[in-house]
Length: 423
Image (cartoon, rainbow, N blue to C red; front, side, top):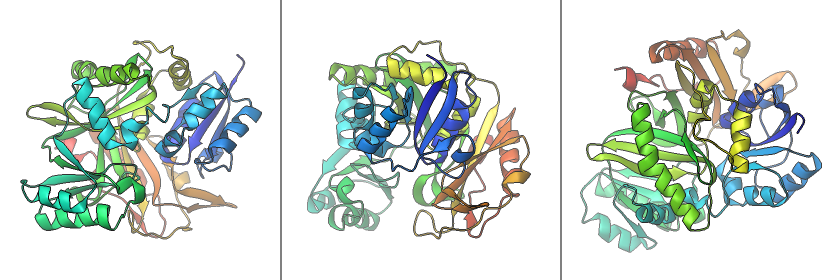
């Protein structure tokens, strides 16, 4: 096959990172980002099709003679985009809609984990607010309340008191704050320990973990404020060495992949295990059916292997255990957001200073767009600034030193990404 034409579906920093890494591959001739953002347009061709327009995406992919498709976000996966692309003969990195239920239905994922013998938080499932309220009154706090379906990373509420639990139950099951995603509610035990994101490449059978990372979900410094889609991440982490990572592959990832295959749902794509390292061992908080954001922005810059070749091997069922090579060093990524995020925020504000960054920093765009010669904000999460260093201390310093050179009205970010690992 001549130089590959690769389609990247999505418009976030994760997809900008995909395009950046794909551009380094000698196999790749052209990259298309659908719909892309203000950053991807510099290294790829942006195509103005929404990620949920499945039929239009497939028709465009066929017309463009795409050799490989990589689906970033969970929404098009849940809508069956990977299924339709494969049916059209396009090798695709991303699970089927049925296998993507590992993320799109938390209760179904719990059933899969139970069948696979994978440790996770004790839980109960409710669709009636009165039943959920009666249950939480008998439990000790804190408790975790989760919308069963997709809620853009914001459907998890931690209740420290009965009053907070009542508010969460009302928000999910009465007010339907998350729509259909919150029609079913999970109430889980609160697990104590350090959180780690373990993402693996899976080709249906073979499971190859990437570098473990840690992310920061709350909007404010010192883990305060509401949960978000992610405010920053760093990799690697001292919490998991290579031997422990391989052990968790064998104990968590392999059994789940085997269980899915046994159900006739071979998993092809990135499988993300959100883990908490408790005194009783690692337990799964959740699974995601795709690369994490912002974890991708710190994991892929550490990848020495050809990302295009890896993605194609996953898509075609030809992944091998020794396929992933990782460089030394550390990466620390800080997410820059619009003031008000994860609530209401203003867009259209000009971003300045990106041309002044030094080689120890990478910038991946999310909520940005071009307006002539101007780059302006177009979303809640705007940029991820990644510091590169031989240690986490150095990587963190480079991230924050370069952040000071960027400005836009209402620019916000956390000041402590990576601090808990360094302390």
